[in-house]
Image 1 (tube, rainbow, N blue to C red):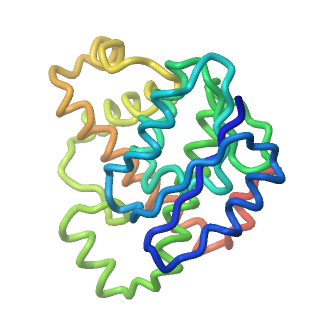
Image 2 (image 1 turned 90 degrees about the vertical axis):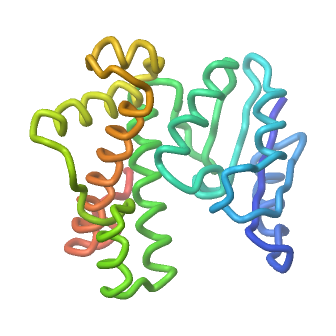
Length: 209
């Protein structure tokens, strides 16, 4: 079965464009949801993922329709892979269940995060405020050099598809909370780095050829 998922953030926004694109991509069933991406609870999406069977395909027009942040995307990829289903972004042919596919998914996620920052026209004052509060997009703070190495390893392990338990064992981290803190730290670092590169070179720098 080929499923499509379309989402808009408010009742006023129109889903027609996404639905038309998903129909063109061959979706047999299209699930729609009207909820802000900032809200973690997306019942229609969670229900759809829970219903996926082996070899089912889930298609979204853009990666930001599926996940609002990179860390959210990583966990959704895990859920889809655990059901032996396939995720497709638009007309791309990447297999997001592989290490290479997860790398590209992570890259798409980082670009999507930065594009949202551009669309929302965040000012320098707003960005400085986000940094002060330690949010993604600000300068990562609070880890020693050794902990930063562990954070990078923990994030890489997640992209490779390792389970939380496997990640804890390989990194030597003692708790899930600390592990997730390290992964969020690395996501923040990569987001800032990607944003800087885009600012210096433009979005063409990160286009996948």
